[in-house]
Amino acid sequence: MPSAVSSQSLTSRAALLPTLIFTALFGAFLVYGAGFAHSNVLHNAAHDSRHALGFPCH
Image (cartoon, rainbow, N blue to C red; front, top):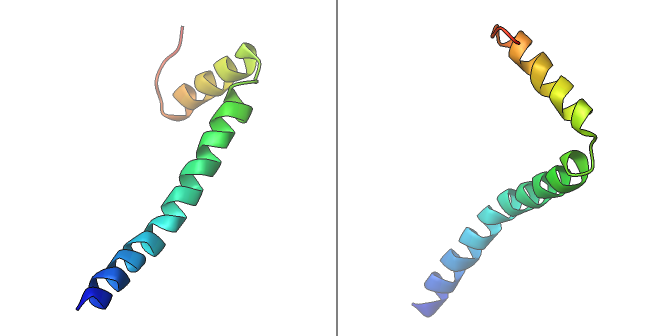
């Protein structure tokens, strides 16, 4: 009976692996992609996103 519990635990950990990898990569992107980007680049990206969604600006 204990083997059923341990295999269920391993299955749960295996199911979490893609989520953990994605989260780690996304976090690295936020730190290195947005963290070191110039503020003008971030402003232009937000500005273009607002236009793409149909929101007015300024």
